[in-house]
Structures are given as C-alpha cells and as structure tokens.
Image (cartoon, rainbow, N blue to C red):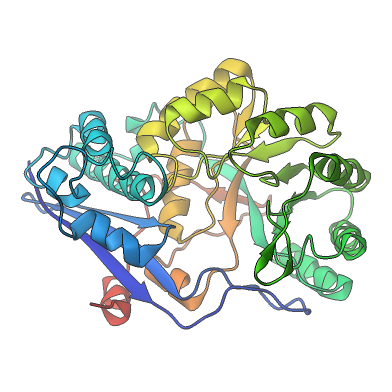
Length: 390
C-alpha cells in the first residue's frame, strides 16, 4: 500500500469564539478549521482535524518546499510511502521539517498526519484503533461537558443546570471572562458549584494569559497562581487546568507542590522528550496531551507509558471536532486508569458539522467507546465540500 495524496482542507465558518452572560451555549473556534486527508492506492483514507493557525498550516503541508533536508513540506515527505509504517514516518516528518518546525504549527500538522496514518493502519487491519494501540481495557468512560465561563453567576447556574438535565456528571468551565476580575471569578465558580451540587465534578480552566483589555495580556505571578489554587480548593474543584505559561515548568512544579487542588496540564506540550521533562519535574497530577498538538498518537502512546510509570492520570485534551473525540476515546480505551473524556459541548456550526456523531451519554454520564473499525467517527464529506475554501 502506498500514500497517493496528502490534502490539507481549509474550512471557513462565520461563528465567533466566546460566551455571553446567559446560560446559552458558548462557541469554540467557528471561523477557520483545518482538516487533513491522507489517501492510499487501496482506497483507505485517514482523516484528522488540527487546532492551529489553519491558513499557515496549509502551506506547511502542501506548499512549496526546498530541496535541503529540514526544509521540506510534510506532504512531499509522505507521498509514495507505506502508511502502515507509522513510527518511521513520524521520524521522517520530524527530521524533514526540523529547520522550521520541531514545535508549533509544524508539530500540529505532524500530529494530524500521524493520526491519519494510525486510522489507515486500523482500517487495513480491520479492527478498532484501540486494539493496535495496546488493547481495549474498557467499553465506556465518563464524559465531562467542556465549555466556557459565562459572565454572570446567573448564567453559570443556568448553564450548569442545562448540563445536569442532559445527564452530565462532570463539567469543566474555562477561559471566557475568567481572570479579568478576581471577585467575579470566585462568584462564577461558587455559582457553578452551587448548581452542580456536591455529587458532581467541577473542573476549572482559568487560562494562562487572562486579559484585562482585549489586546493586553497579563500572565499571573506565581503568588497569584498559588492564591488561585487555594481559593479554588474551597469549592471542591476536581482539578485546575493549564493556568501557567506552558513553558514555565519550574512554576508548575512549585505551584503544584503548594496547591490543595490537583493540577492538570499538558495540552500545549509536544514531543515525548518535552513530556518526559514535564512529568518527571513533578508539574502535574493529570497529564493532558492533545492528539492534534502533542505529536499525534505515536507520541501520546509514549506519554501514557510515562504517566503510568510515575502514577499520574492521563486525560486527553479534546476540545475540537468529534474526530479528535474519536481518537481520544480510542487511546482512553487502552489506559490502565481512565476517569474522563473531554466532550466539547461548545462546538460551532463549523466544528459540529465536520464529524456529526451518535455518541450519547448513558444513565451514568458515560459515553460508549466505538468498537467498529478505525476510530468509529465519520466525516461528513458533503459538509466539508460546502465549507472549504480554495
């Protein structure tokens, strides 16, 4: 089998990121979305989404490369290769883009391509992806509703009650207005806890660059981060997430050591080498690789081994389309311990339309992990055709 085509597909939407004052649902990135399609000469196709600067990513995959090793486009490195040789191709992509990549947009693209190759490999084997990743240990996992902070306590209560009505037993509120007014921050968290009650999980994602004005970024100091964790402990928060600059490993370790609340992070960490340093430095209680940023499933498998070795939990970051949900569920199926899957309830019309899914909650707030061939999530190709741009 050979790879015949590597196609970045740029989609355009009209929705704006954000949340309001009421309990009405928030909206994720609804303006641009990148999909990647890898096709083979035997008719098998892998799809993946990618959360990155989408217009620039198109050039990295299918633009004009250079002859020198390290400056080549990712698509040119894959065409003609055997898609089943996934790990070797990861190395080829990493080395082939080393002079402009190694992290950032190039790694996001490598992640999506790697996911596509794993999907093709599972299809070729005629089995669920989890079987190739190490074997299926569970059939379902609890889903947490992942959304943005509303700007009023009343909106928080309304939103939380809506998720309860839908059957969620865990909710994560993040970003939005959080960080602009410390007093309001506490009111919003208190309102969420009040509505969810003592028997449901509440997670908080404060963001790591809270904004006072739209274009003025003000990261918190270490003292502020420690204070944040202290008062979040008053509300029985399951974890506080990704609230420190992603390259400040020392601060993560110091704040985690002082925090009464478990610390979760890792969605912006990439490559197994960086994850090893992050985990071994004692930065987190819950590691959160994003399969469209970390280096794909090839890296996430290794991160799972690192996490298991030191006894911390792994919950993938999966706030994008349900393609990412599907890949994350297949990885979760293989983990020695699995507490949650992140379920993006804030999808815009653009992200929701790409991979509509029948994934639903059962009476315990859990989602069944697809058991069909591949990842169990299909792309709506007609929707993609209607929303793609040249």
